[in-house]
Image 1 (cartoon, rainbow, N blue to C red):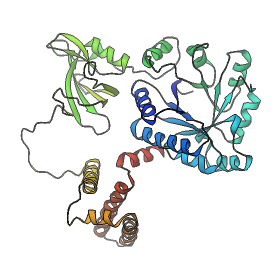
Image 2: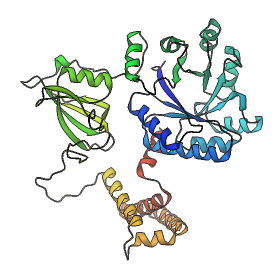
Image 3: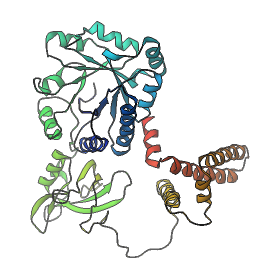
Image 4: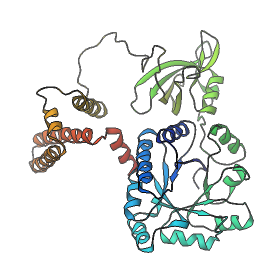
Length: 420
């Protein structure tokens, strides 16, 4: 079985969208393995607002989330999954009518569908739970559970993935996590508590959870004469170099324990967790070591500015340079997209891009269609020179369409990652 997961849940009913997004982001940074976001309100306005909130969260966080929504028909399920949710959750008590449910389960794989069951109102045996797996639900979420032999038998005999939703007021987290076939526990218990601390406690009890563990002991690092090792810090998404600082063994251990970059200040002769005073925390995504074991490379999610001057990176001053052509696809596409977006926000007279925006979506779509056709025709030519021009034209017009529709490259890349 894969590692057990702590999955905070957020009830979106009667909550401001901004509050839900903020809390989801906090959990994402501070050790949650996934999120369970739900709003089972049936009215259309609340449903649409929640879907909009989910799309905003998908842009912001980098961990999976499942979405609990009221589903009446196939379109409801499709729209919920298109927010970027890894699964949608339906409540056992309000499943759609049989015809609609069959369409949903036939159109989506079971790893996209989950069902939530209230075990206090409607206790189930393993045989009953397996009926939902056979219907097409790959995950079953159990709430209001009592850890009894009946529950243990039901869970251990279930073919679907099991997640337990619990406030951890009466039940113990370690006991729930230890149940056979339970993939994780969803709870709101950690809204103001340390998830990494809880994970370390679970790890000490022999429960396999995701924590930061070094593959090379600090004693095997090659340190400077002062007992420190330099750490180069990069943005985990763009690989932009943000800063360089130094770590001793204590700060290294603290970084692993908290998931926040912690350094040793040579001037103050003390540990400092980046962000404790400024709020500009660096949440660890990956730690690497070079071939000589004498330099750490940290890939982080940077909150705010890395530099004390307020600049994003400490490396903002140019010493010397010469012109060169940057052909990094990420850089080129991002910069071109930014130019196109800037044209929309700040129109420039005579700009072809502004001509397209002025003509509107129908003109942009027409051009995308024309360029796609020209690319297909060029591909039949044995000489690839023409093809590269047509692909470039299609990419440009596609980016105009993306700006017009409010998408950026992060949205597209996340969708490609979701399809892996």
